[in-house]
Length: 483
Image (cartoon, rainbow, N blue to C red; front, side, top):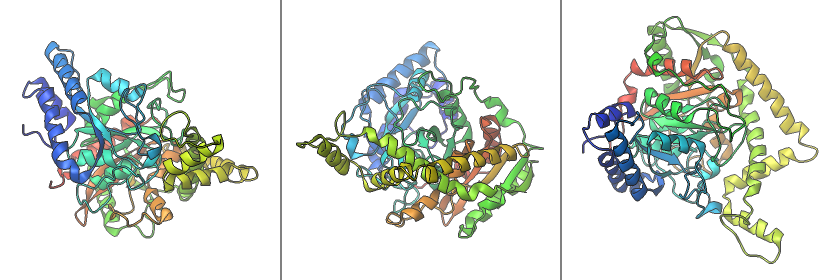
């Protein structure tokens, strides 16, 4: 069956037109995973039997007229999102063999829509990383050049979409973990506003920043997935009660007259000049579509990465305490209880997780809590206010997603600070509490470059509209790696 690199919307129309069945579609993806993923290693676990059973159920919905747009769509799911009865490792040895006992809220929503889950995708351990290298399990490769990283932490999901090993995927974004790998792999990656999507059933990295987001081949597809997973959830008190869907029909509305801000702080020294040029070209494209692009200043952006590191490591220190070798996952036998804790965590956690736990424990310790964590939250509030003020002047912001293209495996692995700087353009949206999306914006040295759009808190309608209009005016999203 010749069905490659198609969008959800196009595939759904073909399914409803009975050009092929959901089972045939799913089998074609499973066959591709079996043949292609040996090199790319985007999947940690593939659900051959379960996927075909879900596809058969989708075919029944298609036959009786109860199918929706996502019915029968084969998806990849980041292995930090729980699917009942399936292994969920969060990319960590400490959860080796752990089976989820319930569905995450986003999974329940997708099951209700009739989606098919092909398997669980690779990630940096507990979503801590920007390259997919921080794991003792599979390290995914970039389909455009397998000597390079796919980005992180949702690298497996991004690589799977780019290599057409699923029609779309879910990732999580705490400081850029959906958008950065989307940029590196030449796909669309979207981070919703905090509170738009439930975190129930998603293993927590940092509770005040984590958000589940879609990785797709088009902005329209991202909107379709977003509308399915977003909404209020009684199991997650941080989800907003008033949580309306995005009107997909409005994506086609012109952006003529809109004001788009171009933050001068996003063009920093050391930025790849080719990426700078592509972002400037994207701004020119928006002007050609009738939008007014103006230079703006986000003076507090320079502090976002420091605020993020203090906030994230502090919450990581707290969240990782539950993995103690006693209740689930990796456990070491020892004579004393304290030694069970120490040895299980020493063997189960990788170096990056340990590093962040220690940094966070220090930041929260007596005598330093007020000096570090509390100060970081004060600056975080100022950054959020700066974004609130800027979106009174402009409808949207545009900038780069990453300061460079995908780097070679091992290039930054032994330099944590250099690795953290990979997220310099994505972290501000998380700290600012706003929504953001990375869209294919061209190529530098034959490798994909992402253009990032940001809109105010709960302004996803505007975000998707501007991103869609830019995408449709270019051809970057139609390109794919030669596999």
